[in-house]
Amino acid sequence: MTQDSQARTRRITAAVVEKTAAPFVLQELEMDAPRADEILVRIVATGICQTDVHVRDRTQAAGLPIVLGHEGAGVVEEVGAEVTAVKPGDHVVLSYDACGRCRFCLSGRYPYCEQAMAINFGGSRLDGTNSLHRVGKPSGGDVHGHFFGQSSFATYALATERNVVKVPTDLRLELLAPLGCGLQTGAGAVVNSLRVPANSSIAIFGTGAVGLAAVMAARIVGASPIIGVDIIPQRLALAAELGATHTIDARKEDVRQRIADITGSGVDYVLEITARPEMLKLAVDVLAMCGVAGQIGGAARGTEAPISMNHLLLGRAVRGIVQGDSIPRIFIPKLIEMYRSGKFPFDRLVRFYDLKDINQAVADAGSGATIKPILRIGKA
Image (cartoon, rainbow, N blue to C red; front, side, top):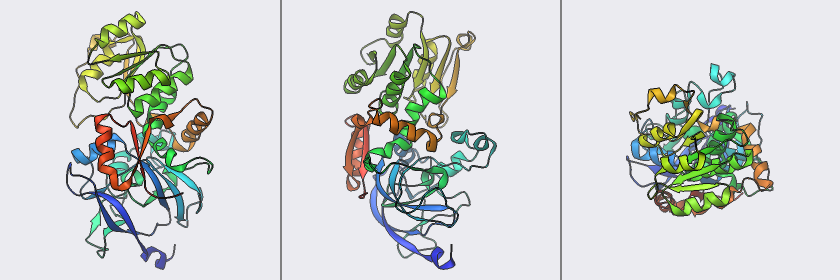
């Protein structure tokens, strides 16, 4: 890339978080041109994930102000000189980033990259620089970005070859956005992380977007029974339509007793998505011998859950799951094919909002009125 290219900036519109737990505010910012290893993507749509809200409300990111968003989908506008995987005009889905060089990346375990926290939550590139600035302030006016290697609550985002997945142009690009995080996490937890065999029992604690993706994946692999647990009746009803053989309303029913009644001896697998300590304890308590509980939900820093050590002795196990152990460039095309075949109808989870309505979309997701909000930002 030439020195002149490096000097260019672009005006973008982004939803900025100025203070902890404050509403998103649309602002005009300046974005630097892509570096040699970066890809400029014109964002068409972005899914809203609970992780965006957690970071906004808990200040888990490196600093404020910051542009969040990590389920972007768009069209490649420009590529750096070292980029070979995509070209301008390609349709892409954006996912999490990884360094590509550590021992976990080199062994194909990208979600557990040694630099995962810094590269996805650090609020900057790994070298500490940022591409976003206040208008007219190229130095000293930085806005934190590069969230999950994208910061896609914006009209444009910078990504890398590691977190860009080329997708077919005959599908609605705006619909594909949530494949980059929530949906690949839920489905991947069943298919990749736990590798649930046919005829195995599974309980899914939390039937939001991640949990419903897990329900659909469990049906695809032939699990039975598939038990959905939640406190929102509408979500439980949808879980039943998408593959759950049983549903439990945790507000009205004894979850432990109902699972015992359904299975007789406990479940083979549990996915705990609620991030509530008592639910992780319950997930372990309802396991059959040699069962596995997978924790997906991200709790506040320092949260601990009491687990019976003796209960674990009979072959039971607990493991954390990041991104469903998915390699996006491999797994997202598989999800797209499952969608095409009618086995993974994730379009039933989504509701679209304009970027200007981002705060309403977040509120609707929090209340349970919307399962997976997707922000429409541009045109394909």
